Structures are given as structure tokens and as C-alpha cells.
Image 1 (tube, one colour):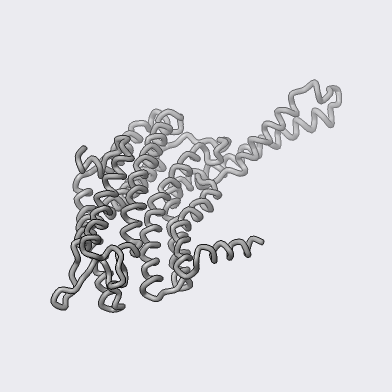
Image 2 (spheres, helix red, strand yellow; image 1 turned 135 degrees about the vertical axis):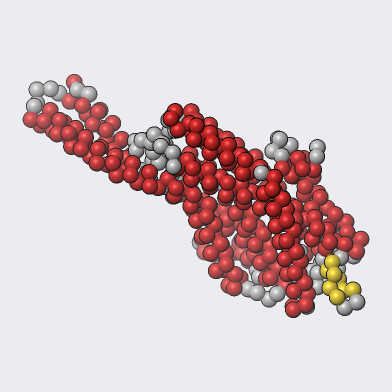
Length: 373
């Protein structure tokens, strides 16, 4: 299996891809720090065993990004198939839909974009190197990744591997999916410009577009990766730079709020269509409701010649009421509000271990127990 296939392919060899990529990113760091004596030691501030950043990047973020291929790509395939066979996109618009699908596929796999992402990944890795150097020079925080040579701070062998392999690899996988998120967003915009056959009485409460809400939320895995990156860096700040949980609380809250907004914002492309659909449907179904209510009243109040059990009108009235309730509850954004809460909780998870930097695990459990009881 070629290394490019390991990085780019979604061919079902998920376990092999995770083991290989995580091994390339993390295992050499262990071996090199053992050779250099920086794996576990009291001679430096941050030995390898105490630095959460390489562990998170190599053993958490890479598996998540590889699994994203198996989660998001099938979702995209399902939605495209749904648009083609459900009748939401009429025959007259199928050619424009195919053009949008082909454009999305082209953007997601275009070669020169991949090259730009590689360059960007290397640049970001260099900026991370600068952060370690600044910690050394300003905070006197020594690290497994750096050492002094003639009074100058340079990378150790492990530091070079992290700088040239681990960090760029993780960044490339991450930025590749961020670009795919952008390409998917452009696809949603093109779909929203099609003449869609939507019905306010659809039981998904989104005119038939409810599938987009569930699918869009799967991109939360990318922002969970970002949360893990931020959390690992904040952990180092708490442990070695003297910051406190209260100092980072606002950062975490703003990140979670902004992430949920960015994830779900593309669904707003459909708001105009759904708002118009609901407004027209409420007027039409409202007029029909008045007619049905009038017929029902005249039949059962004015004309008492028939018994209730001999007519289907009560059943029809109940069916109509159920349909009208669906129309009334229709959302102008194809998103279940409960999904927002679930997303916020998921994005909070990578930050929870930060509480253990100032309190023990048992103290945290005791605090939770006291608040519950």
C-alpha cells in the first residue's frame, strides 16, 4: 500500500491506516526520546512522557481524522443519492445537480489544493516550533524537543521528527478535511439555488431537507479534533506556564459557540426557501382548515341525522389536524435544535481533562457528586 493511499484513500483499511499513520507520527518520538534520555527525566521541565501534545496528535487526532473518512464520505454519498431519487430535485434540475456533484468531487481532490495544504501544514509546524522556543526563552521551560547548542536553542532528533513529520502530517490530514468542509458548503449553496420540490407537510419538519441537518452535524468530528488540539496546548499552559482554569474558561466557551455556529451555518442557505414554503403553506392549510371545520360543524351540529360512528369525518378531521400541526411546527432551518446541545456537549469533552491539571480525579468526582446530591 502506497504512503499516499494511506494518507488520502478511504478503501476500507481503516485499522491499517490508523496503525501506520499513528506509528509514523508517534512511535519514532518514543524511540528517539529514549535514545536521547528525554523520555522521562527530572533534568528538563517537560520530558516526553509528560507532554500531552505529541500523545494527543499521534494517538487521538490521527485516528479521529482517519475515521472521519468513514463517517463523512458515506454521509455525502447518501445525501447525493437522496437528492437524485427522492423527487426533491425534479428532472429539469438533475443536470444542474450533477454539475454541482462533479464540481464538489473535483474541488475535494484537486491536486494543486493538496500541494497548498502541504505547504500550509509545514508553515504551521514551524509556528508550533516557535511556541516551544518562546516557552524555553521566556518562561525557562525546557523541553524534550529542544536543547542548547553553543548557547542557541535547537531541535533534538525527536524535536526534528516532530517538526518535520508528526506535526505536518497531522496538520495536513486536518486541513484536508477543512477544505472538504468548504467544498461541501459550496455544494450546499448550489443545491439551495436549485428549484426544489419541497412540501411543508413532510414529517421531517424541514420540507424534505431534514437529512441535511443530520448529515451536517457529522462534521462536528473535525471540530472535536480542533478542540483536542487546543485542549492539549492549554494543558501545557496550565501545567508549565502558570495559567489557571479560570483564565481559559472564556476561550473554551467561545470556541464551542463559534464551532457550533460554523458547523450549522451552511444550513442557512435553505432558510429562504423554507420560510417561503412555510408561510404559503400556513395560508393554504389555514384556509382549508376553516372549510373542513365548517363542514364538520354543519354535519355534526346542524345536521344530526347521522351518528358519529357511521361517518369517516372525525377520522379525516384528526388526520388533517395532525398534518396542520406538522406544517405549524415546520422549521425554517433543516436542523433539530437538540442536535445543537449534543454538539456542544461533544465539543466540551476534550476540555474536561483540563480540570485534572488543578484537581485530582477523585476531587473532580467528589465535586460532581456534591453538586448532584
